Image 1 (cartoon, one colour):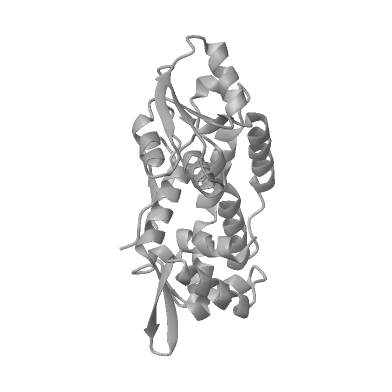
Image 2 (cartoon, helix red, strand yellow):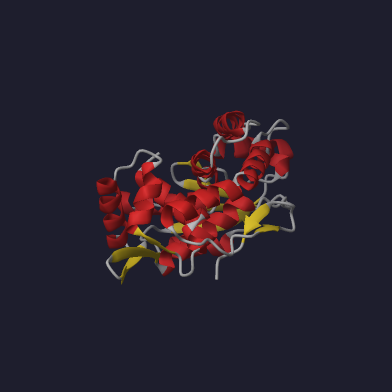
Length: 279
């Protein structure tokens, strides 16, 4: 696991629930040492993340505390919603298509990242597709770029054709395999031997799972294979994440001297488990 990724996972699951979303550098270093990250590396990583605008710093006596920036709060809020909320969507058969024209590589890369985050798949090098009416979000992305494009709605009128588009726009077979591997790796019945082991397990669990919202377009069920492994992987994630919560939180509190409050489990309307933002 990369130290940068570990930092965001730790702030997303723990430090965001400590008052203003801050953690002392010394305590953060102690936690990261459980994952083999040396204090010198932690200092470099946090300095870079601050320079990129993800964190602000303050002095608490002789201690430096890293506090989430507004930009980081937005990222963590969006990421949490996408990780925990899996809502079955009705689909009316419409597709949103984006036909792009020439643009420089930097602009194309930025558009690709943003459209992928919004759930669009690349049907052809210049054609992007997503189920449902996503005209507003698609136009917002394209209007902010330097790439000319046409955005429109379309239908195939045929469910087999729709499934063919889904199979061409996304690597569903590869994604299904990743979901199966995740479930197999984390469906562990044996309880952790210590709070620290619970923390390590839970961080690995979250870090592994939070990649899926960046690659899974969350397609309507009618477009997915009958044996789709996404729901099983999500169920394993939610169950293990909840089971390890108390012990992992105790480990963070002991290592940092912080008190984590407000990370109460809440049951969402669709049955998934989420966590409230600390006050």
